[in-house]
Length: 114
Image 1: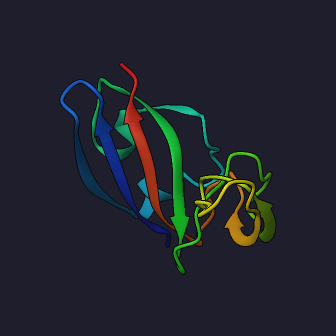
Image 2: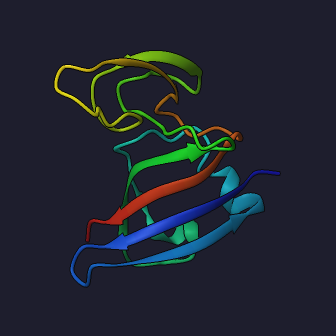
C-alpha cells in the first residue's frame, strides 16, 4: 500500500503542516498531476481545496512539472526545481521525476487554494 507525507502550506498564515496519508486515502492520490486541484477530504481536511505543487521521490529527486508521466529520468536543467546554478548560464544534467504521483513518491507538496 502506498504511503505519503503531504506538506500542506497555508499562504494566509505562512505556516506548513505535515500530514501522513496511508492506505486507501493514499491510493486516491496516485495518478494526480502537479497543478491538479483536489478536495481536502482526501487527506482528512474537509471543506478546503488543495493544489498539488510538487514532491520528491525516495532518493530525494524532485518532481518537475515539465517532465511528463511518472518516470525518473536525466534532464538538462538551467534552473529550479532540481538545480540551482552557481554561475550565469550554467546548465547541468540532473535526475528528476515526472509530474505524476506514483508509488515511488514519498513527499507531496501542496498549498491551500480556498
